[in-house]
Length: 203
Image (tube, rainbow, N blue to C red; front, side, top):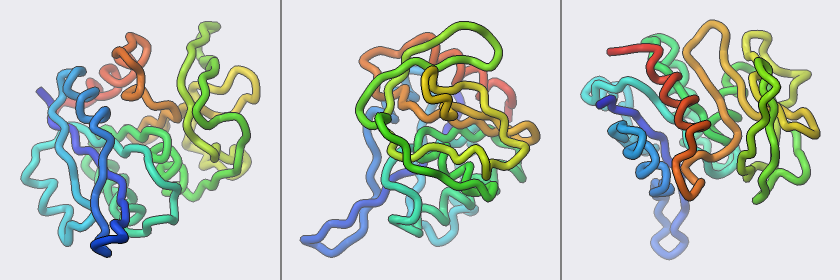
């Protein structure tokens, strides 16, 4: 079984005045169902590189959560993880916010979009005529005009054509804007995408 490193959100506890890591347990359960071993990484680590060296990871997942810029400590950690994945050639999957910060890492930016929060819609593939229904929880989308030329869209919103998934054509990086872990059951569509992606490298 492959160890998959998982990033976490940050929340501020106003009662104790402490910043805490937080992760939707659906992410952990989902990765276990796909036969992976999830290993969470704390936003408060002083030496994340030393921690990762002890984990023998085969992949990295950047999860959803607060918008970029809300918690700079998380932004810095996830940008470090993106850089680390590139240098070590470790597959990196970004989910929703995770996809957005990948775009940000490559000097892209975002723009607000309507009708993408707590809804479901069709996406279309670049490579086939098939369409798939996905959930949607984001208020920002990728600004295609500012997108790095090495980032290639592979799925788009069927109506407004916004980018719902991309790959990097030089690095082992995949972004998806929907949340497969929030589905009631593991869907074959999501499972095939993720397992195929993480099979690209064996450590």
